[in-house]
Length: 139
Image (cartoon, rainbow, N blue to C red; front, side, top):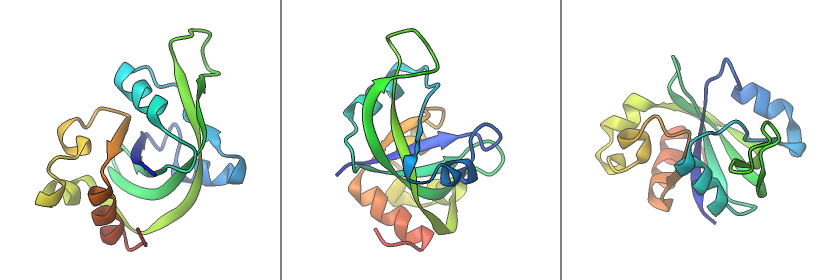
């Protein structure tokens, strides 16, 4: 299993929107960045992800699971763009803010710290465990 971080502006797609989709999940569509698209191409069913609210909140608020591997993005006819489907697994007990991530030296290499604009990014197993501990949920 691999780990990822999915960033979303809550005004466009929030954790609550994701939860409302239930086990059917939803496409992580609309990504128009080649690096983010390529990360989605690496994902497998069962991989886990951190759901991150950007904009004002700037916090990890939930855990998602990849339920469909990369396929054409239904929001465009351009064949270059693909997406995965994800479903909500659980909310975090305590949201983990960007400031907390930046303050923890163990997380200094996270793309969230070094490349914060990237909407889909990898998370190492070690980073996953640290974030889960900070969030009050089992890794």
